[in-house]
Length: 439
Image (cartoon, rainbow, N blue to C red; front, side, top):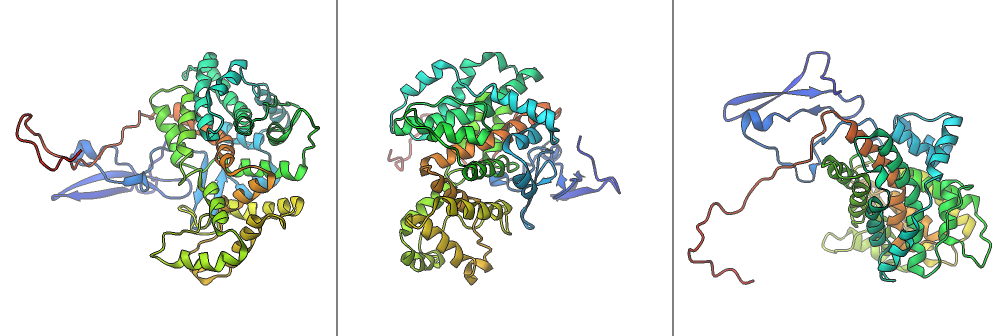
């Protein structure tokens, strides 16, 4: 339960039209405290106005902590740097959902529980045939994820803890299989069945890049890079897609529908599509000699061109995930080589210039996680259309963790934001109509 500030039962006072209302202040374990305004309307008749909910805490959570000013990201209290270095995606998933790091036997059991759900129903293979060959992989991801509720009806009861956990494991396990299937379908290659002797990231790479005609050798460097990307994208507090999952879940929707809603939200270019946008920007620049021109355009307020992959809405310091991926990026590029790829050459040169340019330094426009993840995924061999799919696979860990937390919250209510109505007042039907209507 939320605890009120213990020292002096602090309250916030709001004066409206000579009337004063008091609201309790709740103490955060770390980060910003909050003012409880749930009774604001019943007491005063007013609502708050907060577009984008950027100043509103819509829930209480124990999962992820972010300090944007200091560049801090923690899962259940553990710094992301330590987790990316020492952990793996399945262990991090276990941490996010259960709240603590598992011991060796628990982790082994959890890996078995996840891997037992990697295969998808045979009819889902036919489901893909309904998509056009040129369908965007995220379009397929949204559709197939939502369709899982039609195939796994034994895990739809959100009031049954066992069914909730089974559904979560299925979502996390099948997300990588479905994601790989969207890639294979889009390039016209046969689907590859999962191999449960491999870890999560190795299995995903194998399902994406192996073909029946050849033996596929998994690179430990690329598998580790893939695992790092999955860990860094596993959760990020109450972002748009996570809030979408919680909002859908607040209505009592089944877990597969809630996660499909999260996938749909993630598809937006301002959210999960940012790394694709960053790579497309690099392709627009084209070659290294064009970089000064585009930096000049980025500094011009009247020019619509923007440098994607720099700066972050939350982090006013260096994105901690970007620091990690910068080192991962170096290892991957050294492994695969990038001298024959002009786009990767542009990326490295642009990063070098941006980190020394006064304009970028003053505005704290550091390369962010999207900048480096796009470069890494391109180097591994993924086309830009797959970037957001990979983001969605990783985020199933955080989405399911938040969905569980939302279901188990005793004060959770169905999401119902209010509005500031600025439309017309009551009109009488039949009176002369406006000539301004040109539709």
